[in-house]
Structure formats: structure tokens, C-alpha cells
Amino acid sequence: MQNRYKHMLKAEDLRDAAKKNPKANALSLSEELYSDQVGAKNRNGVFEGLRVFQRDVARNTKINGKIKKVKEDEDQTQFHEMIRKELGIDPAKLDTAYSQNLLSILTHTLNYNNQIGITNGYNYSLGFSGGKAEDSVRDTNFYREDNEVYCKIIIKEYTVSQSFQADTKGESKNFVIPGPIEVVYKLVNDHEGSMFALQHIATDSDFLRDVFLAKNIELQNQLKSELIDVNTLTLLKNINELLMTQLMTQPSKENKNPLIIKEAIANSFYKALTAVGQYQKKQLSTDQLVEALERVKMEVEAVEVENEPTSKQSFIKRHSLLGKHNNKPATHAIQQAIDKAKQLPAQQVVAVVDKSKTETVSPSTDTKNENAEQSTRMRR
Image (cartoon, helix red, strand yellow):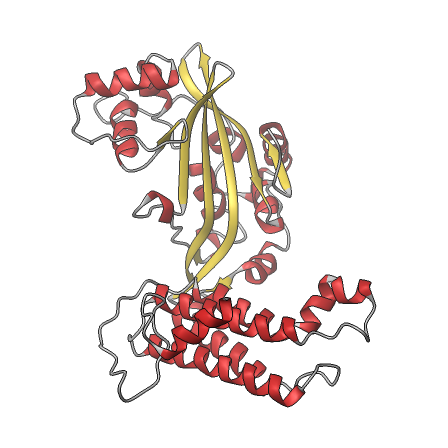
């Protein structure tokens, strides 16, 4: 399998690190989280893995990369037959193996860390559930490969509801620890029964790598630098600052017709600021705000590309990443605003905009609006 992550932590690496630093976590990592154990029975002394697996498949857990049309109360005979056909195993194997808490390695490792977890005055609410599969922060897939059955769990991000007992400024704020994080298990047989054996954890985050490897120093500072504030007011403030800063920026003297460029970009950024204001008034949904900003980006990019200096700069400078950002600061700023807008919570329009009184940035489906017509002409 091709590794597309910065850090690939094998199960052996995790176990060795946990043994070297057993006091890093309130739980025994090497025994409780990084070991391969048979699932737990319920209070009646039976395994419930198959029942839970059927419920999760009905809630968009994938089989061989596809979502199956399964109902929680569907006849178990049909569900078991689907398992045999798709995964090529006796469903009874999943009754014990899927009784393991496969997600605990992702949640408990952080929550019970002795530096950043609940034992040190921190409280996390980690978001792993979601509505539709494409919108969920958890993507779980059970698949067959080379006559073996694997479970891959991918977390897009940690959604953190933070409460610092010693830092009241963080109370009730919402933050994100960016991902993705990938965990892979393999279904194996043991003398006690079938189980999912941990294969690896992969991530691009240096902070999460250090947490999983039971690092015991400087994690608090790493955590604070890793958190991204996704509070709605903070995001809107950041978007406004990005747009206002660029609105006031003078064009480079090397550009052609600097006053014309400034006026064109200022007009586009005014549209973007208007859209943000409409979102705040609930006149635009989140998707419509993103669409409006993306149309503004097309306008701005067209202006900057058309007027990009060519003769006074070397080929290397003009085509380097640094050169691109320097030559197209407005495009870069609007892209940052778009990225932040995509993190805003979903919002439905609750007010009707009176187009006869004010100029608005309309959804892309409104082809009659003057701004939409201008955007269409620009794309041509």
C-alpha cells in the first residue's frame, strides 16, 4: 500500500513506545489500546459484535468501499449472507472481533493522556459521527484484499469542544485538530477467537504522532499550537480581516494600469464583503457564501493574470511559489477566505433579499442577477 501520510506508525512502534513510557497515559497503552484483544461481552455474557456491525453498516459503514442498503432491523439471515458474499468469512467471526472498540485507540489516547487529557484538567468532545457518509468525519471501510479482511478508519479531523479548568478563556470554544488520521486493522484468528489486530496509525500531524508514541514532554504547548479555532465569530472575523486587508493594499508598481487594477479588485472584494454580511444576516446559506466567494475569486484571478508582470521578472521568479503569491496576493487572500468559509456551520436562508433595493451577491443559480452575468462573462 502506498503511503501518502507524513508519519506511518506501525503497531510495533506504538507498543515499544508505550512500554518505554508507561506513565504517559492514565490507561495502559500497550495492554489496553495497542494490544490485540478479543471483544468484550455484554452484561448477559454474550458478544454483540454482529448486531452492532449491522447497525453501523446501516449507518454508512462501507463494505469493500461501497455503502450497502442495509436496515438496522433487517432480517439477520440476509445480512449474514451479504457478509459471506462480500467478505468471504463466517459472520460468527465478527461477533467477537467487532465487539472490540476499534475507535478507542483514537479517543482514549488523547483523553487519558497525562499531559493533555482529562486527568490534567482538559475535557474533549471528539466528533466521530455525522449525517451522510460524504459529510461524516469518520469514514470506515471493511474490505477484502489478498484473501484477508481489513478494517480502515479515516478521521478527517478531531472536533474539540474545549474546557480548560485553569484557562477560562477557552471555555465552550470549538476547535479542530486537523487530520486526516488513518487506522488499519486486520482480522486474525487467535486461540481465544477472532479479533482485529492493529496494523498501523498514519497521520500528517507531528502533534498526533507524538501523542500516539506516548511522548511525555511539551505536549501542552504542541496542543495549543495545533488547535484551529472554528468558532463562527472567529471565522467571520478572520474572513473580514483577509478581505479588508487586501481591499486596502496598493497594487505593485510593476503591474500595468495600477489604478484600474486596484479599482477592479476593490469592486470584487466589495462583493465578497457584501456576501459575508449577507451570511451574517442569514440572507445567504453557507454553501451560497462559498459559491459567491468562489465567483469573486474567478474575477480577481482573471484581473491579476491579465495584468501579471512578465518582462521585468525572470522566468524562475515568476513561476516560483513565492512569486505566485507575490504576483497574485488578492487571489491568495480570497482563497484563504474560501477555505475559512467552508469551515462555517451549515446555515439555511431565513430572510428574502429585496433585490430592487440593494445589490446582492446571489447564489450561482440566479442567472438574472447582474453580478452573476458579469461572472459568466468573465469565465468566457
